[in-house]
Image 1 (cartoon, rainbow, N blue to C red):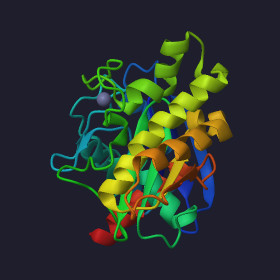
Image 2: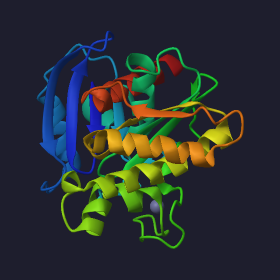
Image 3: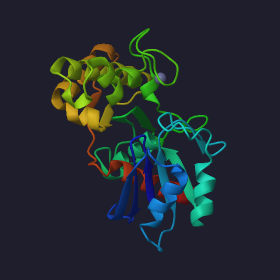
Amino acid sequence: VAIDIGGTKIDVAAVAASGEILRRERMATVGHEDLFAAVVTLARRLDFPDAQVIGVGCGGPMSMRTRTVSPLNIRQWRDFPLTSELAAAFSLPVFVDNDAKALALAEGTFGLAQGLDDFLSMVVSTGVGGGIVLDGRLLDGRDGNAGHIGHVVVVPDGRLCACGAHGCLEAEIAGPSIAAITGAPAEQADLDQRRRAGALLGLAVGTVASLLDLGNCFVAGSVALGFGAPFFDAANESAHRVARIAHARDVTIQPSGLGGDGPLLGAAVVGWRGAQGE
Ligand SMILES: [Zn+2]
């Protein structure tokens, strides 16, 4: 059972080992008196007695140490013990990871990063997230939060971010940030705004490429994919401006090879990865 928990919507699905999505359900994240109880009800609707493991991709940050989540976009969950609550509700092994890290796992298993040992996977939608695979392994970091590229500062003294800093990539190019800057929904952003968002993303990616010696970045999410070629062209130009050192100058930023099912597939891989590690 795969569960993708975002700030806007929550998807659940029964996923076969082949990556085939057998059944799925969706609900909005907001408007529930008890969000966790609503998630349990939604997952029960899958009615899938053969499930072996539950994998979850959840908005960050999280704590692997305490097995809690505190998604920036879900204010009622702070240090919420999602893993133990789900395990108690379903009597199955449960593995929870950051949603952008889950997407990196999906890109490596089912998407364009198949066969690559080193890449950055990103999502630009309600928030901006990332997951890093280096030397063939998804990076976790001290407490599970490696890859939070959305909180790399790209505009010194820029817009205030939900994390408390100013000028984070997320505060400048996430959908709500663009809406706040332009006064209109992100999908109505003009060419200049699309290019600006791409250029800022490229700044962050070029920096990461220099730092980590990786050459590929795959970007998913409604904002990035909706902005299309102007966004990706500007991102690559910008990355190549900042990544001049030999090992990073060929870094390529391209749209994710995963369709809309990427987050659910990622959550499924989180479950399988966890089950293999046990
Ligand atoms: Zn931030």
